[in-house]
Image 1 (tube, helix red, strand yellow):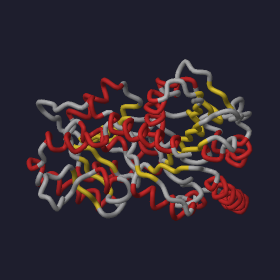
Image 2 (spheres, one colour):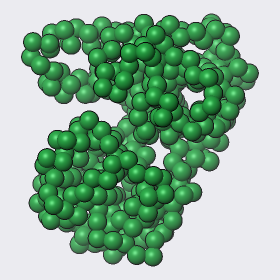
Image 3 (spheres, helix red, strand yellow):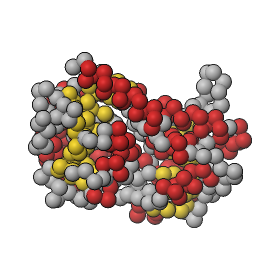
Image 4 (cartoon, rainbow, N blue to C red):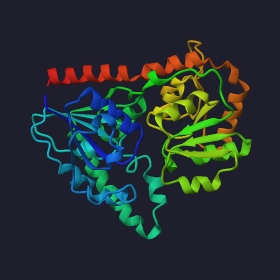
Length: 368
């Protein structure tokens, strides 16, 4: 069986790239297609394979790729996917728009419908300079029409959370199968002691709402370590107080130590799933999170069966709400059972994902 794996781009290291790494391990002979990529950001299990790119490869960089958005549909449709039995698209935006043979089966693992066109559209429009807003709005309107049509060409949608299942239904009028993304919980371990710091991990972008966490820790005088890099780094450093430290991109070994020794993990983003929050739990560390999106599925709070909690929620994306959650956590910090927190995370392990994806692929290919 000839298999193609398609992604929009490989320019960063994040949750989507981690999922693609596991898919690449499951299908080691799959060919790789993308619009453009940075060789240093290709997932490990895809490195060494020929990567077929679009005509945007020569002009796209981490600083310019957003400006190329109007060209994405033309670029993704230019990829030559003739002769493949199975096409797996890993999609946050345009990858699902590939043109496949009529005999091919197109499975889209949807991390999210294109957020810039849907739930983040108003926020994105608001930060565009006023003279450019009409052109931006027109571009998004045309892309939204193309995106809906592209979604109808997909044979099978797989969603990474119940939250995304609902959004696929709302945006595309399509049903989907739920398979939670893979988290390497096997690396997790329980530390003998915990240091007096809170931890945040991820790309430094405005959607992660790290400003809330920084201001909350400024207000409380709590130590916060931030691992990651991104375009918001300068702005975030400008508002950080003396108890906030930016670590940049850290190695896997150092990240493990940071997770295991932290007091708790702070997570303010409205995420579709939130792999880093599950990673933190795999080290037995509770999560203080915004109560929306995938966090409601990955963090156990007030469980009806009486099992111990794995975190604390705050209801609003505000500094005061985050401050309140941190203080509530500290009042009951000793009630969290690290072993229970770790066991909860293991339901999202790589092995579980691989088994479910293989079973689903076998089913759809046998019944095509």
